[in-house]
Amino acid sequence: MAEKDVATMKIAPKVWKNGELIDWNDARIHVMSHVVNYGSSVFEGIRCYNTSRGSAVFRLKEHIRRLMNSAKIYRMEPKFSVEEVCEATVNLIRESGLDSCYIRPVIFRGLDEENPSFGVFGMLNPIHTYIAMWQWGKYLGEEALENGIDVCVSSWNRITSNSMPAMAKAGANYMNSQLIKMEAKLGGFAEGIALDDRGYVSEGSGENIFIVNGGKLYTPPLGASILPGITRDSVVQIAREMGIEVIETTIQRSALYLADELFFTGTAAEISPIRSVDRISIGSGKRGELTKAIQDEFFAIIDARRPAPNNADWLTFVHDTGEKKTAVA
Ligand code: PMP
Image (cartoon, rainbow, N blue to C red; front, side, top):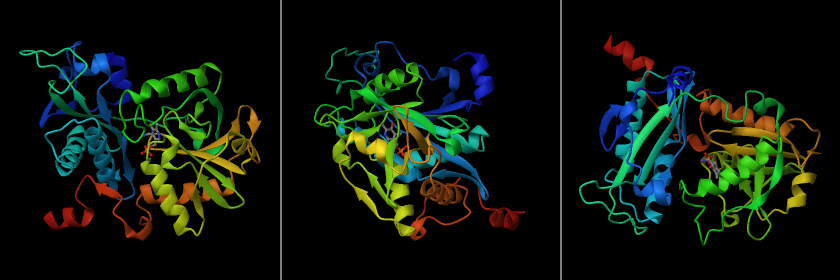
């Protein structure tokens, strides 16, 4: 990474590697590592917010559980538990001095340089666990959350779960995502929506999708080759708490064009309204009322201004609370 990028992006100076802190510049691997040649990584994307009550990680445990589930599908056995990776994440944020950041834990098959193994099999290669973090702004642009984005339906289908399990957040899945994203961006769109192998709506290259119709929410089921998104789950819970019916069902491409409102969800994209699909305007062509109402609740939760649905523990605070600090002082 160029120094310029490091300076402008505010990257945490340390990286957590297999239980130890190393310098950012030392977080390097051999080009013949299994992951480089065969795509054998699983990872997470998590956000730490600078909330009204201090820095807090959003749904940390759920993300690290999904990381471990992704590893399990690929027969990778990391040496660390969910609890240990959660603790390491929080400690690294403290160490980084960042008050908000994007967190990237990654588990991959490396290379044992003393006893190298170069084949596809992979189970003879060592498993490494790393965590890096940096400050990352709005993924789809500052304006996206309010004005919405223009998207297209991709000519690429989403991976089918029996060849690449969409349930695992594996690095290799993102080759499919890259095809979707590159095609969209080169065509002048912010993002692409992939259909599954049956032609039903699946998801964006890095987001789940919701349709609003007649005051109800619709979203593709896990069977449509989607990642079980944690923001998706948060939106489902928030909407149900608001008394909005949420229906997981197969969705046809044309239903996208006829939706009252449409939005993406994801850790990076948060809740991003979609204002057009294939240049067809959605609803009023602006962020819809229900999308805004759900956004408002979501942003209040991630800013610690209101509790999560059912008082669930969605925020892991990075520093001691004010009360504790006063007591110590
Ligand atoms: N689908 C894909 C393909 C993704 O990469 C992401 C981002 N992790 C999502 C959906 C949204 O998942 P989450 O809300 O857990 O970030």
